[in-house]
Length: 400
Image 1 (cartoon, rainbow, N blue to C red):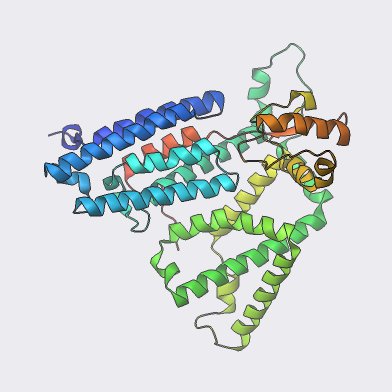
Image 2: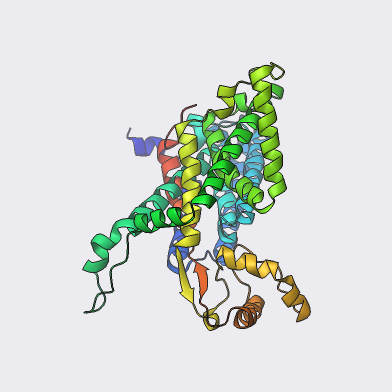
């Protein structure tokens, strides 16, 4: 019996549903920059029908018990699927609020999690959230794509950009990205020094929180180290942004850090708390945080396009500096008796476009508008699903 016939079971219907709708979402996201709500509605209907088929076959007909793996009963299976999907929805919602995912991505991810059979997480099953394996593989796929994009943009000018020149008169060569970044560091040495100090405070603070949790409730002991790396990757940047915006939080974190360093040096009040534990952080953890900070800086300073105020359209995402200026200028909109509303991660709403154009012409006449480029997550979800199906495990294991 071949591998195909051995594995050709009923739950591959769910795999076909995931790959079919995931592939369609990847195509739409890649070509148009959005995932249609109509596609997501049909995906939701397909997931509901699949779970109904599973309930009938495994629950009423008592056939194909492998459909319930790793749970033994239908109630246990449905409870795990519901828990798995709700956590996936919460994670997607948090990343949407954090401006890392678009709304379509946040809706697509829980649908994939609800449809993908639990047995495909068998090599590394996380009790609280089985789909963490899939989430990790999606994150790793996105990091690889982002890294490839950075390398291409940094060094592509050496070859491919001129091989595919669009005119007889080639554009004047630009300085490479690494040179522009180095000049930026030299010009902003003081700011980078403050950022490094802030970075140190954040590292110490996260280490302290992790140690206290491990001592009090044993959370860090129970969690896989890979989960801790992912939490660190997504949590560090919001903390840094909050502390940059609200200096009292930075001062509070610094005071806590200094107090705990003194406790570690002169007392044993917190068991196991040592200076080495506080300042020690693995190379991988530091690399993840530095990569995240560098990519965010790259997006804000380099990876954008310029348009005139008249060229603003709905769904365009303003650069973060522009969003900050708009939020800060409350007096303008209040004086004009206008309501801008929240600037959502999915870009400008149709009714916001005219307001932003009006504000721009009066506040910054003649200046171009920076528009952030979007990263299509649809293809990344598809790559993460394929990796999970093939490996049924993390694409790479991270050490402690």
